[in-house]
Image (cartoon, rainbow, N blue to C red; front, side, top):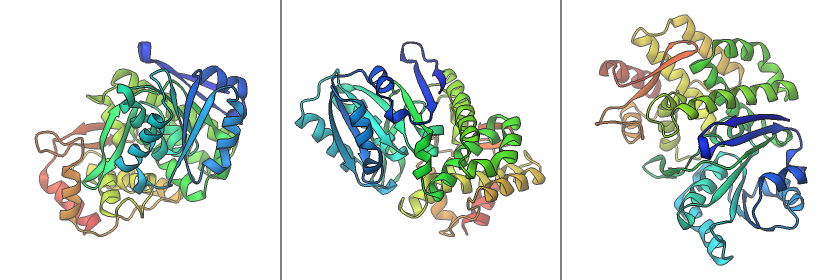
Length: 358
């Protein structure tokens, strides 16, 4: 088992990465130390893993709630559903919410725990690659609104992240590829050596090689933990983690959160952001091609849906990173180095949107 610490003073917590962790009763009882536990999962993950977690937590009062699966269900209606279960079962402030599932479950359960009785503890048990390397770490929780992605949320750090890599064996290939988008993101933004490693080991990752997966998850979490340590509330460097997300969120919102997985939209968004970086002279065209080739090797789409440049711009204008009416973007200065900026020519953004969205 690999152990990594997110250093946030009194809010610090460990990230545990390894095989068969969900069946380790002593590990779970040590890190999930609460008498009353609400296990939040969904209709896909629950039948696979909820029983083994509940078996490992015998002696605690564990109640599970299973939400419908899919990004379109990450909304206030399902937050209310989880709150109703907490209230009906008289959970107190010393209770614990455990999120067992992917990013949707983690974001929604974390936000609900941040709201209930002004905040109770929660733990992350991510079961997708995307959630293991990104959404489970850092304390950003929230739900979607018809007007935009993750517009309703809170910063609420987990008490522990338990990443059982054996759950990835039941992950559909499409979900695995979507998770790889977030892994690749860390390399593009922070670490050219990690990018070289990914290019050499991508086939092993797609084949679910345990050693390759463990390294990719650990390095991704290590990079994110360092950024979160410096900028917990996204007032500076942490915004770099949104590379590809502003364009990607427009894709998700325009397609109703039903057609594209989050990682798929981010993958396309990273290619669009790299293209814009080249348009304004930051990035050589050969590096844009390198971005495109790695994304395509991972099985990710680089062609955005053609729903119109004006519509894409409208969705981007309600993004949380807009300031004083100006869309701020994460652009690449080089592979392995990025900047968060609103300093770009308007015609470059217009040309980028017209080229990719029509």
